[in-house]
Length: 68
Image (tube, rainbow, N blue to C red):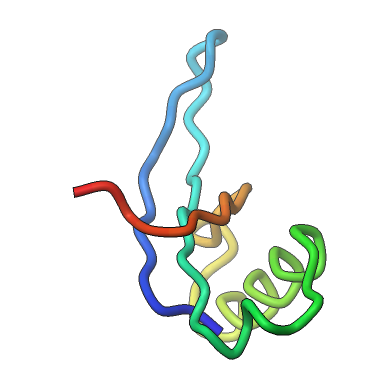
């Protein structure tokens, strides 16, 4: 479902850091009726099988393309 992705650590106003994943969906996922919550849940489940909990992004942002 993912064509491109970038993960960054972002700091909020209180100084806490959170991992955020920026995702460009593959064409087959864009044609599906996945909303943001369904996509985030699927990505968390998939990544959780391979990564420790602290490395799974706290939030996902769906983009039409990564900025260059």
